[in-house]
Image (cartoon, rainbow, N blue to C red; front, top):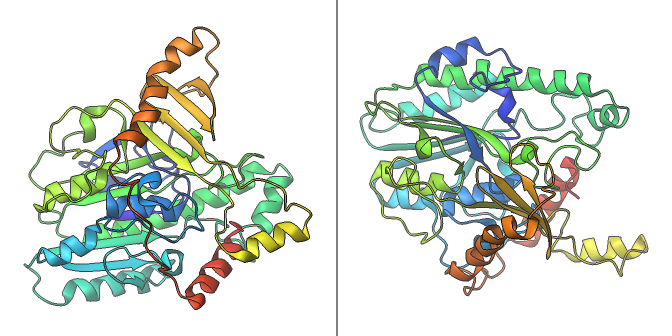
Length: 397
């Protein structure tokens, strides 16, 4: 599994309106299945990756915002299942501290950001043990995340200033170059290293980017700009069938898909489907984010200092959608939009919205996880402090 943080759909070579030039990667992935109809479950890294390893939507596993740190008790962990199933498991991330307090089922090793050093690190892992044994590798590339190589290294620094000044083309150029670097100098050499006659590959973006006044980067909304992500899929000798038969698919499906590929029993009892099973795809999907929430007392104190102590908790922003419409909501308020253009539906709104409202209700009434308590205190004080400092540096707090 290869997760590229903050990867927009229109910044991969196979997209209909691609903005990047990645010939080396495109040649290697030419035979991979590709979906332009894949949606994330959230617009922030921590909720998304928790869904990847549990097979659950954020409202089910409990990580609805970037600052949340408690997953529901008993939730599965994909990589623990892999390990218990006899697989040699390796998890690597260029931003391992972003997973502080989240149990992905195996330790996450810090991956060198330098392309050659990071590749050699992975190659050392590949050389160890039985090269013909069962292996499971997870890579999380952070380099395309804000601030896109800015000298100050701050998400709310130089790059944010360019956005405020309306210098979008400069921001787009910086982002494009970082994405091209990830694909050409990190992912492509990795694929050249792997024996693709033996390795299955799932490559995806965890969420996109907005570059709007409402949402400079991501983590604030559930607009298509942050939810639509690319999905590449390669399974040796399968003919690489189209994921989900070409319909709308979700990153929540990847847990079930990997379990099916590796012959592991599903433990999620969730809404995801195995994209390679041939089953008809689920008509309705959903996504959500609770932006700017911090579970710690510091957040409350900061609001009080700013005279904001009476303001409500950050709203839950959500959407339920298929390939025709999307019901876009904030707490209990909602509006119906066309899916691909996100324009408001002006006529017969209540009638057209009815199945989406029923689906929104069904997600919560049918889930078997909401009755389970959240895990008790997963993070130490030192871990909470490290995570808070990390999120502050990234502009989430």
